[in-house]
View 1: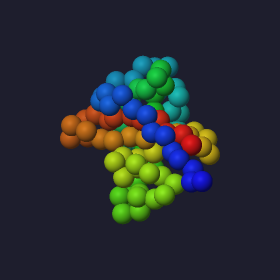
View 2 (view 1 turned 90 degrees about the vertical axis):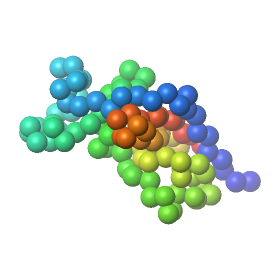
View 3 (view 1 turned 180 degrees about the horizontal axis):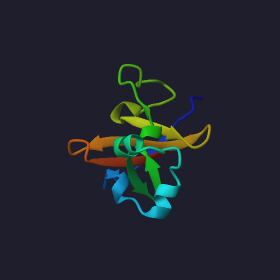
View 4 (view 1 turned 120 degrees about the vertical axis):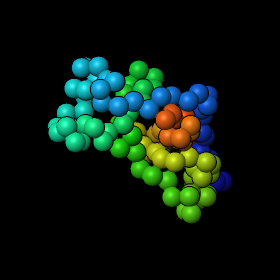
Length: 106
C-alpha cells in the first residue's frame, strides 16, 4: 500500500509583507535579520496567527516534484516542514505580491 499525502488549502491569497509592515513583537521573532540589508531583503506572510519568513522556505524544483511520495507538489513553489510528516506549501500569485498557503501531511 502506497503512502498518500493530503494537501489542504482554502486558496485564499495572503499578502506578502515587508519588514516595515511587521509589528515590533513580530520583528523580535526574526532576530537573525540583524542588518538593514537583511531586513530590507526579507519578505513574510501571516498564516493562522504566525508570521513566516519566506526566505526559510525551500524551493520546489518542478522537474523533480512529480514524485510518488509528494503527489501534487508540482503545483507549489516552496515548502517548509514542521515535522517528518507535515508542513506548509506556498504558491506565489499576483506577480509574487501574494501567496496561497496549504498544509500537507501524510
